[in-house]
Image (cartoon, rainbow, N blue to C red; front, side, top):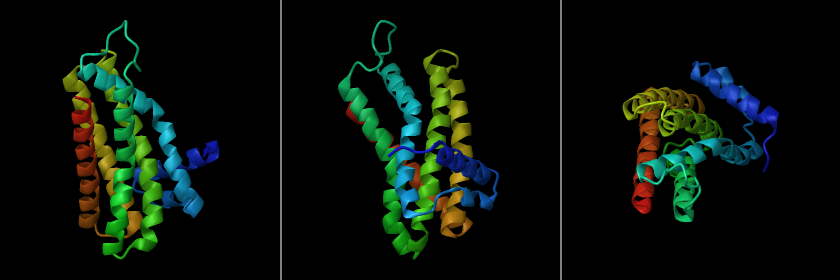
Length: 196
C-alpha cells in the first residue's frame, strides 16, 4: 500500500494543526475505512527512525564500530523491527477493548487514524536526539533532555487528539495517553531483554 504525497502532506498538516490545538486539523485526515487501513502504511515513513533505533541498540551493546556494518545482526534487526511495529500497534489494539468499554466504538476509526499519523511524527522526532548521540554531536545527558522535551510535546499532542477524536474528558484522555506510554515502555523493555 503506497501512500500518495497529497495524503502524507494533508495528514501531517492535520497533525501539526492538532499540535497547535486546532480541531479543524481533523478535517485533513481521510477518516474513511480506506484511510484507516492506509494510516497503518504510514509506518514506512518512519523507516529512518528504525535505522536510528538499530544504531542506538548497537551503540548500547558496544557493537557500533566504524569497521562493522550497521545491519550486521539479523537477530538484532528483527528484534528492533518487532519492537518498532509493536509500539506502533499497541495503543490501537488496546483501544479496541477500551473504546467498547467507553461506548465510543463509533469514534475508534478516527482515533486510530490520527494516532497512527502522530506516532509517525513522534518516532521521527524522537529519533533526532538518538541520531545526535550516535554520531557524537550530543552527550547522553543532552540527548536525554531533547528526548524528554519531544516526548512531552507529543504526549500533549496525543492528549489533545484523543480528546478531539474520542470526545472524552481531559482526565480520561490523559489516562489513555498514559496507557499508550506504559505500553511503549513495556515493549521497549521486552525488546531490550530479547536483544540482551
